[in-house]
Amino acid sequence: MSNDERTFVMAKPDAVQRGLVGTIISRLEERGLKLAGAKFMQIDEELANQHYAEHQDKPFFDELVAFITSGPVMAMVWEGADATRQVRQMMGATDPKEAQPGTIRGDFGLDLGQNIIHGSDHEDPGANEREIDLFFDEEELVDYERSDEPWVYEDA
Ligand code: IDP
Image: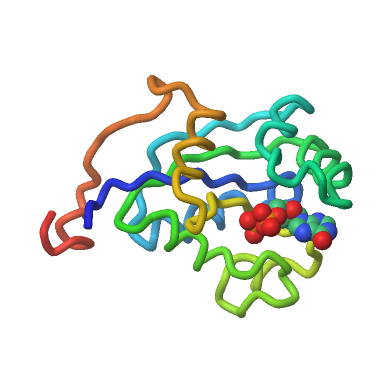
């Protein structure tokens, strides 16, 4: 398995307003995942429509777009072995009320519509690359080694 799989992660507007951006970054960093890009930004309606295109026919779509454009977000790219699936596990279930304690949603959320974090779907092949391309230009992503990599990966 390669150690350089990249996945798209976003601290949603509720995470920014509640001061949880640092906590989210810390959890991913401490796991051994490597930050490859970050952008503190305001999502406009066009980008929201593109990002959530798969949900456009759902009854909650307008609410979802209104929420994700309601304030700034921290868009990020994280890298590591099995990164997409591992981040999803760390996020917990979509509805924070169903998310296990110890997960980000399970520790910090109580409402399906305000569930703190987005991570690319590991069950949708290519979703990580598509979302990274939507939010970042290639030159905004950084390739580097973290000094603890040999202590995270036996084969590093
Ligand atoms: P995910 O974020 O865990 O991948 P998705 O099913 O892709 O979950 O849904 C995208 C986002 O849409 C969720 O994170 C959640 O904020 C919102 N959402 C999903 N289902 C509902 C719903 O039934 N009502 C309101 N918001 C919803």
